[in-house]
Image (cartoon, rainbow, N blue to C red; front, side, top):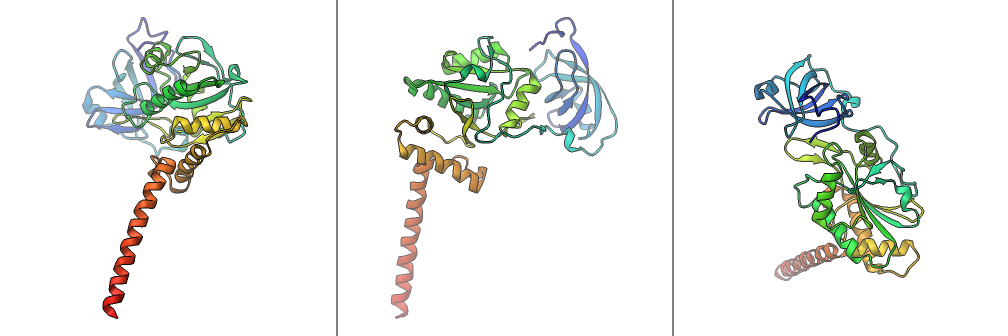
Length: 320
């Protein structure tokens, strides 16, 4: 992966703060200043020699040569100062104003998988389903699952005026050619499904306003929350689904209801139950799939209640 400005130079000088170190793999997560054409952001680097990583501590300020022709990028000739306590300003959390139901989606400038400029204002008059992914995600329960469901949405949308949008959480890597390959993998039709990226900081700020803070780790890739957003034809947020267990039929039913069109109330109830379960119980039930799992839970509780009844009855009879 190369950026303009790096074409003629193999290495550039980086200045940043170490947020975490994994000596076993020789990698560190660094929040760095802008260098070359790379904007300031937080990302993982490999430290060479590996023994140098073991000498770094979280909170250390470093200066190093960065090699952008390796994957992940490599830091060498690392000079560091003593570690200082990390402040909130050094964390990957972004200081943005959170968006709420009824707010307008920001018109952040993006580029889609075809290389064409993209902005949400282009979609006024259409319902929109928005999600956040990155192409290198290897967890089948996360980004690939969302994109597979988006393919189903694309196939089942029919004559609805619906557009799908996925915003990458890996803007330094997921440039339009990479997004184009990802789009082909899932059969994304650019007329109905845009996979977009912008400059790193505005893209990650956009995601953070929806409660998505991307945190790169050497072992697990980018750690991030899930939030699938339904946007009305007026460009305002109608629903936020903070789990991955939703079904395309449920999303489509909710869109129809927002439009005032007759829709499946059972599907809408199932979507609401999934979201409510996560809101009440947290991410430990993030795989809860509405009515289906509710039915399973009721069967289990019914069976337990019956066993307790039989046991109590037996004890009562024997004591009598």
